[in-house]
Length: 148
Image (cartoon, rainbow, N blue to C red; front, side, top):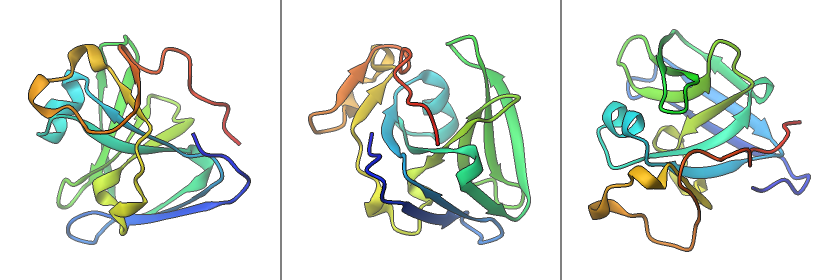
């Protein structure tokens, strides 16, 4: 996690441009999630995201929300553009204290610097990310920071 007092500004949006977002935050958490829900919803080997606090995220445009009970037992919301269905965020449900912003939706995807992998117990062998990342077999296991 990075939280050095310097505010990170993240901007991005959906494929069709109907939804745009901006997050200004001092605490960011960059990670890959290997759970089966993220794989199925995203159509890839894992979900790449940056966690920001809920008050830091400003969204314009019409966003649709789908909820599901995750392997953790918690309800998770997936937020997507209501027009083109681009997946933009994931959050706890019904009260989103934080959002996981999809790294691929960033205007500058190079801002994504992964440090963690979660749900590695269900990672597919053919698509392990490269790098020296801190791994958690099932979620962050209580390692999420307090948000500003």
